[in-house]
Length: 232
Length: 322
Image (cartoon, each protein chain N blue to C red):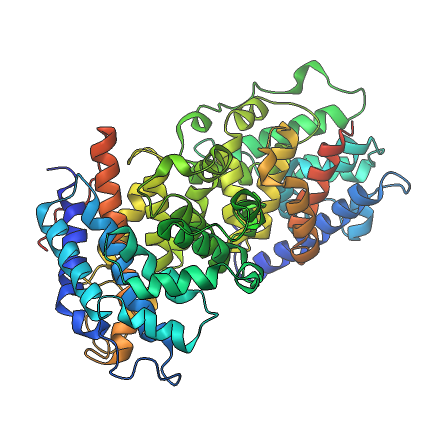
């Protein structure tokens, strides 16, 4: 999926708006009804909204997945439209996994829970075994929307590389790459096995303070903090 | 021949240091306070410390050891066989740096009796014990006291715990300054890498975990001086070739080393009008590369020594024609 020029800029802005809305919901809890598509004030088939939803993947439905907040019909339509409009590129690990994550979340959140047709089997995860710490940091950061309350094969794979992902967290913090730091920190929180000397909670709190200018960083931090609290 | 190129890095650096040793000479009026000691006695002391350590390491080439020992002898001669330190402490009787810089000579069996007598008296005072210093510097003073057989002025374990590295900080708080604090903690505790067993196990485990990330960030920033110090620490921690990223960092440093054997402290300092010799011959040219060149010689020799000690394989570098 590629976006260019003015369209790309519009997608970026919408990604930020959606991420901000989801991050706020995760941070503030389930007090208010959550209706992303209504807050966007757009049509469910708006190509910019669909592209933005595909970028964020399963996180479009994170308030339901993490907090059990009801899902609006508009949000289901947005997530479903994004999955249909941007099918997976089977040659790409991130594309395959994030599409799988989006459709799996959609099926779980949809009417009647998880039907038998849920989904194709999980994509492969062999790449997580042999890659260098730099490579798996990059890859797991791309897949952060799958670090949620529902376990996949990615979770034990991340746990097995916890030291290496922690090195990636340290490097991202030093580079002030707040989105990558928050995304990797989210995996470490989900796996629950970051080395004690890392100081993950304090690191995430710092990202929330200094890196929240990018709403994707804020979203990953709030998801990580919810996972660390053991919500859902 | 594996490891030969690593020897080449050390040999090239020492060749440059030998060719430029006159730039380490002290000014005639070295006690004049208008001279910044950061550019007079300190470089000479650093030359002495690192060449002394290199000259004692097994597993390095005869050429490396010979040049290092010659430079160490030069440094001792240039201090007037210790008289420089005696003069400095007469001018600044409460300063610790003359002792810190002198201590390597005492360890090498080169003594200046009246300086040592002065220091024994000064180190027995309450004021010496109570002097306020940054914690990692306290470790340097403790190491110097140990080398001269003086009573430690404070509890070593407590001093270690007060340092940045000794307290095991969150590793993502790493900066250039804390990076130098961390490398010097290791150098002071292990006597410049020659006694690796003196590093506390918890600190060793911590560094094995986090040094790869620090090293990558430092190399990425083109900060060759600190990268060299981190590679020296890596050689203390683990057999060469086992710490992730160390071999890549060595290759980056080898690329950054100039044909004359020097290496700039920072990558951007190589970007002058003449990238091989920016402001060649000026004091600035010397200052911008003497420390990093010393450090890379030290780190390369220490890595060769560690490889020989462990029977491990030294990093495979390009067999460059230098």
